[in-house]
Image (cartoon, rainbow, N blue to C red; front, side, top):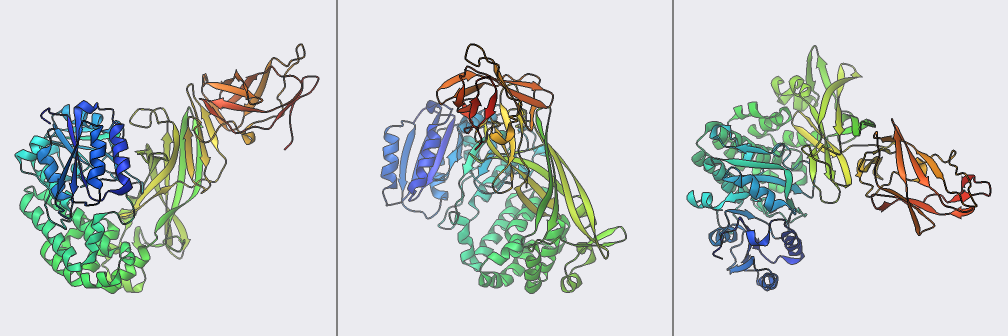
Length: 615
């Protein structure tokens, strides 16, 4: 293709299977016109018909092209081949079983083109967990001064981003090749950070969905050989030392890698790894720490991870296992959840106590005005007081609410505040409870824009001493709803006792039997028909000053008449025009085109009284 496109999408394939359909479907759904982007598939010697399938797709899509190479054993060489063939102003990389959100290419390109960015870091979503990119995609940002850039701006260190093609070529930035080129994304994105003069961060529009399936991540192969694992980790450390000139940036990258690939290996996750791999790793780890990680690095770690680092430097595997057993299963258990609608916004207060894997409160010892970890005599004797003293770390504990779409997994932060409380447990011991308060305004919570219609699960992210939990908010009470001038919203308890928000009457209707007060429903008689209005109060619903939400009432399965919601303060009444003869009538309410479940039958008697047929 000689015509320059705005974006080139490069996709390595290898025996791609059914996952390829997600890729094609998402590319076909892009809002960026097909004349403005190209898709380059580079098949890594699949030998199973994958390339033939790709050519079938390309036959009806002129902006698709297919290349075949001999098997290289990794995604790096296909990506590099794709860069060489690309003509787009920007290139991005997809895995062969992931997907792009519909507005991805348009929004990300415009974010980069607006400032001529060398690199665009757009919002990515994963189908597992809540927290991916939590500290990065906080706001849309344009960074045009080198001194304002920090390594976090290019994280997570994965290739699902936009890179200005000429920038990559100018600095010779390519993926390291080889059959087992672990952490190849780290090398590329670190080089990008070193050379970039402008960066755009796109948080307000979702870009990429990473379909993480169990066993599908190539990094799992890292744990096949302790010698290879530590050798590859040393190569990364050497690369950082040689290629990152700024001392603070180099230190941050090293600590980040140390935290996730050394400490995480010997933290609670160690208990899920092969014990032989862990035991065989110990001498390699000690050699790695002696060469690359001085003991004073602990000053830059969160308090809980200082303990792991201290024992790792000592090579004390038995106590590392004991500490991992204590920290395994740590979580924050919610006990008190208050939910209410105020002026069209959902106000949530959620308190949670930190508990251990057995479900018991985690205990801390209070000594004067200081707070210490309670880890048992053996561990406490092995760790210095400065690590056991967690006073400041507990005071800095936080909680923040979040939203996640049940349909497409997109997550958003919710404006929140939190407070830390120490609850007396007797004998000088205390437990820690964090109370979070937040507000969800469905019309502005997404960077000032409305929340999309659909079901949204409400989560909370707690951090304490470097320990992180991000789970659903627990809620066991009945639902509370709101009606605005354009749509409805219902906060309710799921079958798993979690808090969810249905916006736009998508799954849960505000109009259900338990939320209607039937006793004062009546309709005066006129000429044999009851033609006036059936007025029914809706329980637990807050209404706006004027509710113009489209409402219809369907009688007897076929007759639809317009209804209306009349709001007054914190109550809403459903007003139903009636043209019903005496007898029994079925009915349901249709809001925004979505019908409620069938409601209890109406019985109109000969004098105009309305009753509801007993079940």
